Length: 352
Image 1 (cartoon, rainbow, N blue to C red):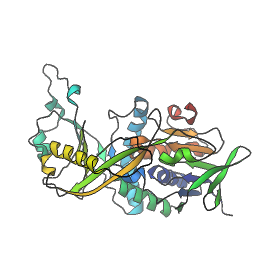
Image 2: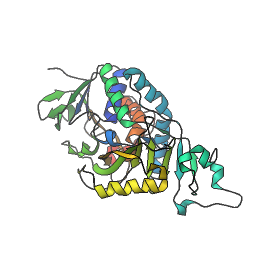
Image 3: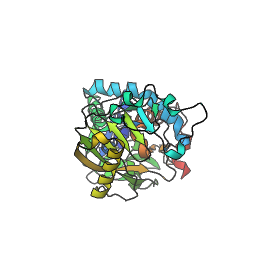
């Protein structure tokens, strides 16, 4: 029976990025995915690479900043190995704070936080009279990114098994020994749980992950289009280089329900039009919902478990795309017996 050095459960951007990092270290890797690789949270994400947004917990910010700095090399390496353009955009973000968060002091104006007049930076916002802040943030197309990661992982000879549900972790004398799926068993001395919102469903360990639903839509045909990511307290808009504009997103506790609600999508669409009137004639291209992996403290779960050889990398919530480079880097170190280059003690599975 074929065996591997490491089995990764879950083929989202976290699992695929980790498989590449481990292959670079010479490990034989198998990635097992219950559905189609990259078609859960990674497929549904907007791709804003927000280092320290209002939603980013303080304990997570150092790791987020490190990962953001790794992103240029990470994305271009995936592009080079796969031949797939991941649409890494560096035009930046225009942030429109909530009114209660705007506190101008004598001699200070929010216009001083823009490198040029708003109408010049973003003609579609020419008539807007709200204070804005320019942030040097990137964005990426997560669907292209995960396709590139999948192709790069295969190019590096990682084995991928899809359409296979993992039923339990196999233990031998208390140590990880592989996994049992609904079809067969696979052996490996190391198993890493990267199953996102489903990470808590793999006995005998339980991780308190839960699905947090997010509904979004995409439009096409806006004239003028957008160059920058737009973030406001009521909505965000993420332009793609092919002319699409993503509009999102809700944060809902709705279990594993991925259905979209027409009224919710209409509300998001109208909020976007209210902010950017040039979107009104744009055509709705698609609406969808994804399930982010949430945790009780909104922090990821990273590192070794109480069973030797069994590790976990999940619970990235709204930051999975951003945190993929640093998660892969750190977990590859930990899994291969090295000391983590960055402190991940705050994210230990043992805190629950």
